[in-house]
Image (cartoon, rainbow, N blue to C red; front, side):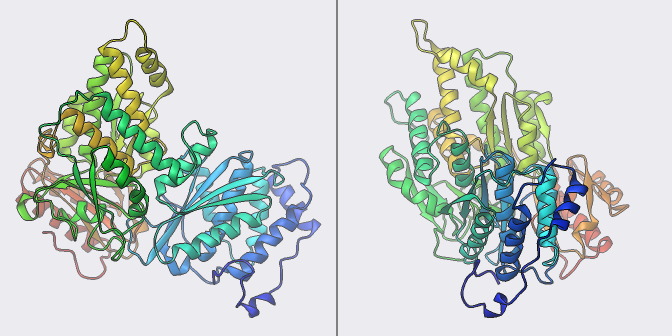
Length: 594
């Protein structure tokens, strides 16, 4: 299955019966939904055409049900063809509901192993799919082959779609072997819901897809909706920010050399066209793990963050490095070499570096009355939270549920909202109020001053940042520009605070759905009694903190622990793992925390 609509080589499928569309079907849907006053002619026939292609080329068969979560749909690639086809249909439907605005579909499983894949939909301004549409996605994906016609027909009327509107869908895919096949399924699904224009970006990072969709929505005001437009905007913005603070003297501590671990993923494809252009601006960038090995295997941001060690093919004894994840929306820095000398600069530290830089400029620019704040998740190190409170005030430090969509939503309440998960996934959002105030201060004139220069730099920082979504490449360019302007090396960045020792452990359990959390995932309310056991363990550890939450992307439960000393951290983490494994049906070998 999954060879593409109408593809040769499926003679048996051609004999399958096309679902019959009748006036009775349409009347039933009309009575149930009440979404439209009059039936649009041809909609039952269109739904029947979609169902016919799905049955012929992308049947669901007896595959298990999946839910659209924080990362969209994500599972073993072999079982996703029908879901990718149906998400192409849903993207076209969403575009029509929005009056023909562009909607994006990204084929990726991010930091998951090569054997997995997934799909997520992107809104016109680069936002994630609204929660109410996540339920519709789940309903459409899980419809049986026999019910697909009726379910789709019901959805069309439930959302009040005008199918005569010309839809527009952008499709991007990562470098997994399964991604080209699954991207074709998306294109088939979107194009069969006529009339819909489908544009494939080919190999693209998740942030590049978000960027292109946002550029299309803003008619080019955000940039050119292409992969070259993405590279051009970021390189020019980086150059302008660095040059805005140039004194002509070479930095003393900052060294413009960087090794980039691309996780053998699509980040290498996006970075290659930028390397020579950045070298001409004085930034030497060497790509490692750039496609010659297995994706996310012994490399990548998730590996470095969890294992707290260098990835394969990278040695930072004399140079700093960054690791991207498989679809280049996460980035972490590290330096110091291997073993005890290894030092990690994760998403918490990226957020605080950006906050430190922005806060100083906002003060110089005289932008009083604007809120600068940070959004963290439960995975933020306790020491970073204390540092953040000191930097921007307790009222401007927020904790959101894990998942970029939750952090993004929380950051919208701030004028300069910096959100990063500890895994390196995040960005900075700038409110319209901030932009208007900063532009007014930065406006050239006889009174131009240090305040105007500071406001100008803030606006240039905004140009480097990809506000549409967390973007590893734009974030590493923002960090490199800031380090150069401050003339800092990684040691000075690290010295902003000292991390509490911490460990994150995956525990395979019989049913991750049996776990339920609250308070931004810091408290586990199901299984009953588990949180009480965790609380007892935490009480016995100096500066202890631990929590348990089900993964949104893998069939595991994640355990996080931190404490004042490494010995206490290892003991707390192991004890928490033991409790979870014993009380919640652990499978396989019980993890040993080291």
